[in-house]
Amino acid sequence: MHNHQSNPECPNPYLPHPARIIRTLPQISDHLLFQMKFEGKEIAKSFTYRPGQFVMLSVIGTGEAPFSISSSPTRQGIVELCVRRIGHVTNSLFKLPPNSLVGIRGPYGNGFPIEQLEGNNLLLVAGGLGMAPLRSLLGYALDNRTKFKNITLMYGARNPDDMLFKYELLNLLDRADINCLLTVDNDESGIWKARVGVVTELFDNLEIDSSQTYAAICGPDVMFRFVLKKLLERNFSKDRILMSLERNMQCGVGKCGHCMIGYKYTCLNGPIFTYWDAINLPEMI
Amino acid sequence: MKIVKLPKKNFAEFINRLNIFGEIHAPTQRRDGSYVFAPVRDCSEIALDCTRTILPLKKYFFKPLEVMFNFCAERGYQIPHREADKKYIIFGVHPCDIHGLKIIDEVFGGKYIDSYYFARRSNAIIVGIDCIPDDFCFCRSTGTDFVDTGFDLFLSDIDDSYLVRIGTSIGDDIFRAADSLFHEVEKEDREAYKRKSVQRRENFQTEIQLQDLPEIMDLEYESQLWQEIGDKCLSCGTCSMVCPTCYCYAVFDELNLDVSSGQRKRRWDSCLFKDYALVAGGHNFRAERSSRVKNRYFHKQRGFVSQYGRPSCVGCGRCKAYCPAGVDILEVVKKLRSEIRA
Image (cartoon, chains in turn brown, orange):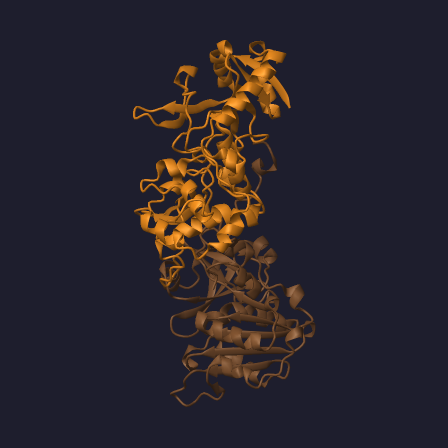
């Protein structure tokens, strides 16, 4: 074996870079927004990403897991991860004292095809934790507002207490440059001022030119299927429907094999796939 | 490509001369009759009649278990000191295994280069040798019964001698360091090679048609066959461990007793293991054994074609030879093609 790959100078792609948790912002029950900053000055400065990409986060002594980035690359210096406490790594992450050291490597995956999206309308449809990756795209689009035509956000949660980024999103209701449609399935408290109902009902009065729009969907399977139906009824091309997928990932760089779906690695070819990809890959949705 | 002749009477001396280039490893026979790649001191230990070793070459470069990092709470992750650059000569590698190595090279290379793998890989000299297939071999069907690259030297048996192809610059150095042992190839050697080639071809008892298998697999995606194999399969992962092109691994952290430092390790994994596609929260994308079996066949024969332009099976026959449940890839392919009834 005598080629460039034997170069000992090549960096170790699995090495987590030290990063510090500078703030944790409570979201809903069992969900925290972690704000992290790289310790190394160089990487802190050079680290950039596309909305929809993910990082591998290491909790020292516990392990490593993939997390989609919730912040926008337009806000440099801080990486935000919205995390649900659900497994081995996240349990440890939630127990870390303030200012703890963690490891981050990435960004990985394709992310949203931003260049393709620009110049079009954007329709973001989120359910539950699906808002976490879409918030990056939303932030990017709002910070580059002139590059996009109409922006519509549809976000549904079970009830007001289950809505991620609630106050941030409520602030968008009054803005003229985004059509922000927030809905909850139920509101027993009676204080919810926005809509009550499922996300798909938001399509009823929506005027949208599907030939000039990209739809990005992220949420539970059930929601996905219903939203998909609505989009196809409105003649969305299968290439203009984008979705973010979750799989077991242990390397993030197309080696360990775990995130394989049919013919693709979620970590390299995804996690953003078009609906056309989905139809062609077995066991994808 | 330069081809020279090594008379078999010089073979022992040739192996001795190899020693200066690194530690020689070659197929050796164990007491139970099985073969393994192991260090050898002289040529008497080399099992030249070996058809297949239990494990392929990947064990040298992609360790069954290895430390990726040392970690501690204060300093994060550190790359362990690299083992001294020990040179290996791996002698007696069959064409299927050389093809297997080329496939793993491609997977561990690319945009993100696996530094652990290539640190070892770049220190190995590969000396290939041709072989006579047994009834498990189907490398002719997979197009991997012959190699053009991927070796430093390659020996072809022509009865009294070996014809030696010189594949790389370091291969040429080895030849030059022992050039008194070699002769020029003459007319009768060329004829002997051709006779041997026919003889070898006639030894293949097994042939399967793989060319349009990806399309047939798409057509048979819902086939009852997957359930049948799933019922038979034990999910033991043996086929993955012995496969020259299976590269999946699992990553895990191990804490030291001080509870503040430890090691991140990786070990060989198998897509047939139950927790392979399990995600946090408990959802398992392939909870059924049949779906895991199907995934394995799809990845090898269908997915890999889309990703890398060729199937990742090299026809070595190990998965069939070592499966404790008797799952037979040749039978699976024939059933998929309805050449035999499911």
